[in-house]
Length: 405
Image 1 (spheres, rainbow, N blue to C red):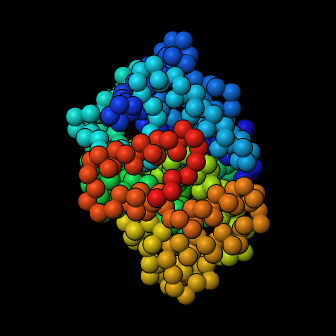
Image 2: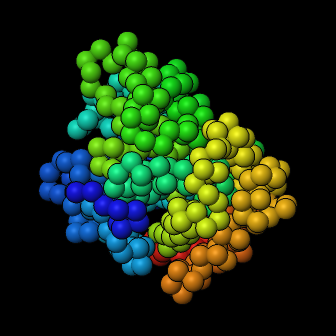
Image 3: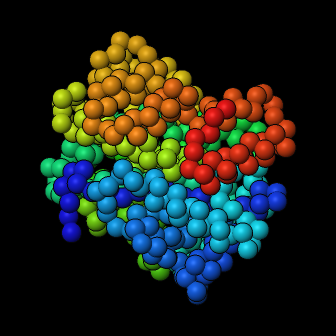
């Protein structure tokens, strides 16, 4: 079934499983799903939420079980499932840990691929790209799926999403630390995302999708080059171009939706949904063309937008935006990425419930989760200090509450 713009939504949240005693990653998603289902499976329907495996054996995904129109109560639905997972994991001495990257994991020695359903696809990915890097095995994100009905709606939605992608990490950055050290990027997940498929650059492009605004052009400009590039690697034809397209937002013409993928997972579903709601309301505003005409939105090429994005993943909300034309779209002469979000929030606030207004205002006031983590840790933190901070983040997830540095 096809839906119109903003009629329904799909939200996906990924979490890592860690050992409770030392926070090391625990590759036991198969045990969790078996415990819940009664037998080994890769997907479990749990009412309105579905559980499923991912590429690596320590990451589990929670997602809306089909499209939903109700974002108001979704954070609590996800939180209930988090609590149930944590209860099941106690038998294995394990628990869920939030944020987009484990701060102490060494992927070269700790990564294990999912070995069950779809394992053939994951093994092929590992053969092509070597998934023992942070960009493959130490990344957790939120995906937002937004529907479009036809080419006209795709054009409007794709143009708006492309324009917003560069500043989304200003809200969502939550991956400042790899292997016990500050990476220099508040969104290190997106820094490694840029190059983790360097063997076949057609798959990720410049992260920001190219200027294609209808199905035919998208197939010709994105899917065909991907299919051509993968051919010599995928000799058994088991990979699908929708699956292979790894840009920061991907068109899913198989289900008439665009999936946004540049959003780091937060400390709790309350924070994830606050970010999702603000992004969705900003996109609604852009698609109305009240701020910027469709032709102006479409005029931005991926290189200009990538330049902004590349700075934002380093400094998150504190990034000075130096592109005057980009600032002008939001009626600003100067400012940071945070200033743009404050402007957008002021314009859409009346469409947002009081509860979610409070949540969004907490994030806009206190900064990205990366900023709060770094504030809590101070300069050159010990491994023990990092562990203690991430234990607190685990409690935030279990209790569905914000992390306050």
